Amino acid sequence: MARLGIDFGTTNTVAVIHDRGVFSVVLHRADTGAGTVVQDVFPSAILIDRLSGEQWFGLEADRLFGQRGPGPHHVFLPSLKRHLWGYAEGHSIASGHEARARGCEAAAALEQFDIARLLTGFLQSLADSIRASGMIDPAEPLETVITWPANANGAQRYITRKCFREAGFDVRSTLNEPTASAIELADCITAGRGVRKDDREPSAVAVFDLGGGTFDASVVWIEGDEFEVLASGGIEDLGGDDFDRTLLDMFLERFKLSDEALSPLTRHALLRQARSQKETIAGGVVRSLFLNPLDFGLDCSPVSIPVDAYFERIIPMLKPAIATLRKVILSAAAREPRVRTGPELTVYLVGGSAKLPLVARMVSDAFPNCRVILTDKPFTSVAMGAAICATDRVTYRDVFARHFGLLRLKDNGQSEVFDIIFPAGTPIPRRGESPLERCAWYHPRHNIGHLRYLECTSVGVNGLPDGNVRHWSDVFFPYDPVLPMDHRVSAEDVVPTDRFADMPACEVYRCDSDGVITVELRRPTRNDSRVHEIYRD
Image 1 (tube, rainbow, N blue to C red):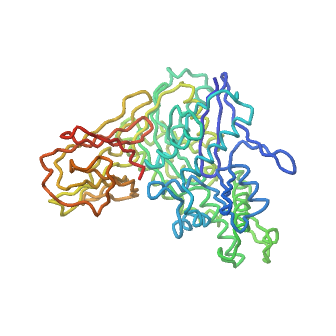
Image 2 (cartoon, rainbow, N blue to C red):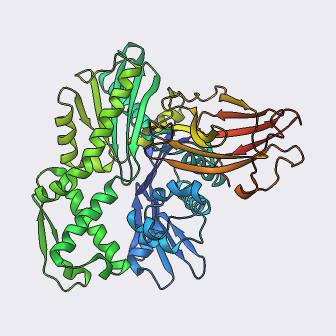
Image 3 (tube, rainbow, N blue to C red):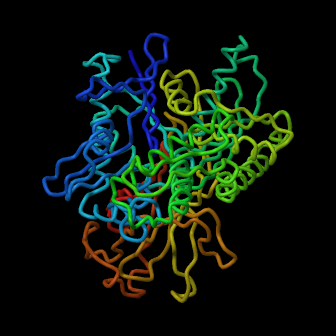
């Protein structure tokens, strides 16, 4: 039976299939006027006609936008994954200033589109393309292990898994992207050296995963067939997309053109050329980057930019990634004393953006005693690791990358405190294990509880969230026994009262093997309860 590992990436999505002992990258096809185009990646892109509602995904979206450009009602969304961060704050694409800050002006026109529907449509198109590849029997289920960033917030995890399932994938398991790469590396070393996994010495791998839109770092402890994430962190808005825009900005500075003066089609075409020029650096022999604006209808003289000047511009962008990796390694060492920054620690560079020679140089300079390995599979390492997991050859355990909890009132409602339910570093259950469970009992001081969920990377001295705060959906809990559990209320309906103080309330939190959390709200005196998926408004 064939099984899949899928890396849903910011720029491209990659699927690896395991069938009868062989791992193969799925090839995607699109028919064009010039013939059939075959690619081993499925662009994470969507083209929408806002007037008719018609949508194109993947190769078709990328090809049609490149050929025709946007019509008066067309919107092109080239990096869908970057917009999942806003799911819990309205379920829609980021808009206005926030969209422009994230490098996608088109998103400002997409407020009427639900992110979950767009993602499901994209994944249905991906499923169709996988089946059309002929690499899997049409009658077989799409048994899949999917990946997400180690630093993905809970809402991203929830919506990604939900949409994969609604698109027809049988999601067997999930894991974070750096862990998948660590599994791929360990499997490669084992196969290359002829070493049995049982004979391999326990070791740690620090994964530096710099992709198209996100940066992730994890330290994974490997012992035989078992992989345990010791610590994770990341930067959700750092990746190749940002480096492309930086290079384009440098070209525009030389042209003396403003970004606002470009049409969407011209800007996208220039970004593609900037990306193409950036990718020539990987070989280590290119010394300058060239762009001829006449090729794009711009009345400017051709210019070239020294690679060293480009590197100087992006060094400040990479420094936070190095600092994050160092913090993650220190956190892992606190949990496992055998983790040391020496020759016994391997730093594995993965992701398409890790091909820039500057990345390896900066990591090597920051960790001079560690063994730094640049993957030979920058675009497929994650999907390959996921496919290995799909074969049930290994077991793995992830951890919470952030603190998860909710704001509660204290001092008779005069101040707030962050009640941490699952602290950062808490191990997540393995597949097949019982969900992680936490209970909170208390005596209500209001008629209705307003439960405001969020996650963060740190807590300040005042006991409140501090650092990379992400809000989830608010939940209202009727303490008044007259009100049914599903009664629709708002914050304006909440009134302080001691009338229900003798009716204890209970919240039961459960985290499954995918890191997805639900809360069961209980009123023991009424013997009723309700389970709430925290991400859903």
